[in-house]
Length: 250
Image 1 (cartoon, rainbow, N blue to C red):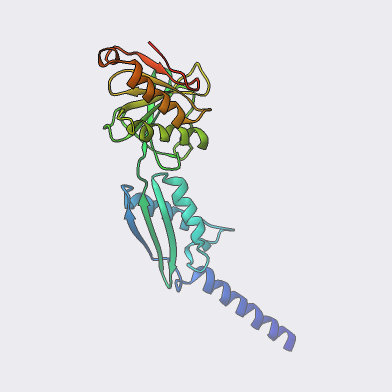
Image 2 (image 1 turned 90 degrees about the horizontal axis):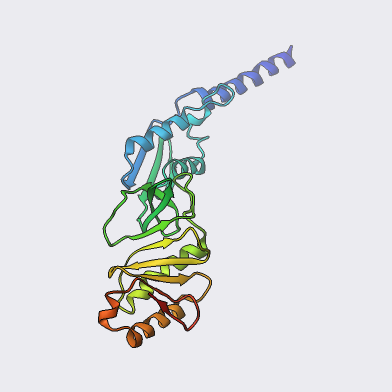
């Protein structure tokens, strides 16, 4: 009889504990506070979090209890669902609040992929991640890259590998040192290890991504200053500096 009473007591305690954790409202999430410095609508972020919290495990809505809320899972949810977001932090504030803060990514340039006869263009960040659709044309402040080789699958992907990205991002500042402004950079389909920079004057520069960029820019500078008159410069179609210490033009 005593053992039976102890068993009833233990079961009552367990049942009370389960009720406290999963069914009582003591630590139920009642508020999602969002400090948002991006252009992502708050309601979209809140809806994604609400849907996550409404999930059930074994028919029990454990996600709604702040004790079981995993901040890193909500952080991953926001990062994966909203590629425009960065510096995402998630904190639990007892007894009832999930606090979220995030910033918006800053576009470093526009990367365009050729799909059929059309270009699909996306803003990319400092890490080379495509995070938002772009209009086909943007102002001159953003670097424009036309990629005839790459393929686009979804927002959040890297536009290219790190080595090629670093090489491309170095072109504009190096050319600015010799007073050359560029409109866009093209990764041509028909040749490997080559990128073409189109100047604001209308002619192109062919660079090798396997060789030192500064040396190629130096060859270009010497060639323009010593071999090309202002009259010829206005008639240029391209200058090819891919061979070390050489420059070929048309």
